[in-house]
Amino acid sequence: MNETERIQAQHRLEEAQARDRVNERKARTRRLIQIGAITESLFPGIRDMELEDVKRYLEQIRNR
Image (cartoon, rainbow, N blue to C red; front, top):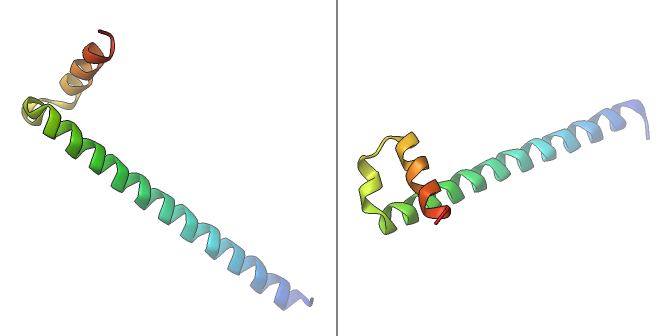
């Protein structure tokens, strides 16, 4: 393998890794949105709460 081929292979690897990171981030974002939607459907009152209040509310439920 010559130098040009080595550099091209390295770039292909880096591009594949970047695509994987983007796909992982998108999957995480989708999962978080779905969890939020489920949480709001089960606890409709949290729609009007500040995020810190939601956190405290959920912590109280967890600690029961």
